[in-house]
Length: 193
Image 1 (spheres, one colour):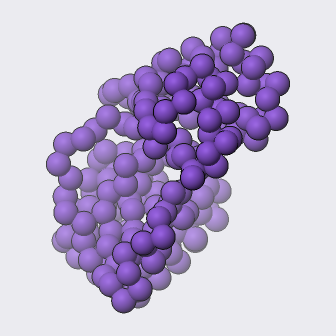
Image 2: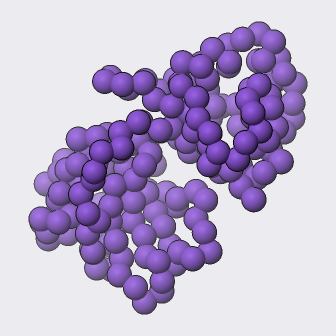
């Protein structure tokens, strides 16, 4: 069993309905994101962490660094897709692309992750070591305010415990990157599911 550590932006209002896209449109988006990733020097498309065996595939794409018109061109300026991309850019989130069965529709919707936020999918033993190291309850799901994560990562006693544990060492850089994220209009939460 894996536990996914992610950033929760706290925005839970109704979102636009996901839109259906074609395989050719997905290919055009992948080409655009690959080209722009080279230009910008950042990863813009990645597999979603924690995908269940039910999904044929699931991806998340960063669209915030790109112009709406450029991205929507991949989808022949479909109004349903534009609504999804525009709302994702407004909220500062990624878009999620998935297909639940091999012959099913390919969908695009708004992801739960903020645009530039790292995500870690960690096996159960290492995830429990991270939670214990941070001094958190070893529950499979939970969240704390980002300010509390920052405080825990800078507490000398907790930091020493984290630095001394070889199970946690590979994840410290990502934990620090998560703690460094700050939202302009609200505080993020550090969540695990």
